[in-house]
Length: 197
Ligand SMILES: [Zn+2]
Image 1: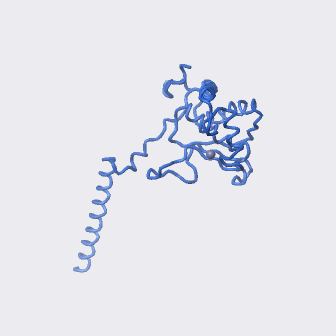
Image 2: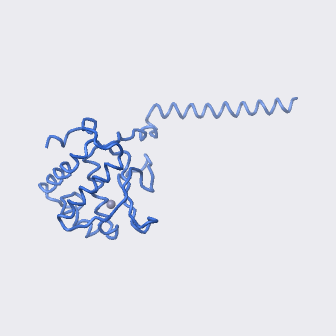
Image 3: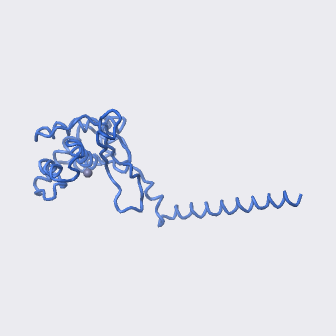
């Protein structure tokens, strides 16, 4: 299980784009789901925020999002994986969560059907997974992610740029305020100059 702890940056590059990586991950997970009799339909999967967007002040920012068939013009459901994520095992878990939704097109939300599929896979989403099953799940997802190599994204850091405790943010804010103040002084000057002419 040494690859479990192999950081993303140290993995070999196999795919150039995250969407390619994600589609191959879907294929691998689809086969895994099928061993428990759960059929994952065709899905589009991309890297992006959910329609709730990103808000650093919110307690929870979604790591993934499933958009059911009825929201898709061609009837193919869509999955978004947050650009915050970049470690393959993390991506696999979020993707698997969204694929569970895909099995029943989000019908049961996080209800009984969802939890029973999560239980089959050994995921924590089922509520009371046995530790050994959870460990096996981590192992399995790592194995599936192994041939996919590096997740071709490095994550994002701009969460910090929103933070009021970030000094850069404060400096930026002060600069903005100063800039606006100077602009309004300049406007007033121009106005008085025009009037006095
Ligand atoms: Zn969910």
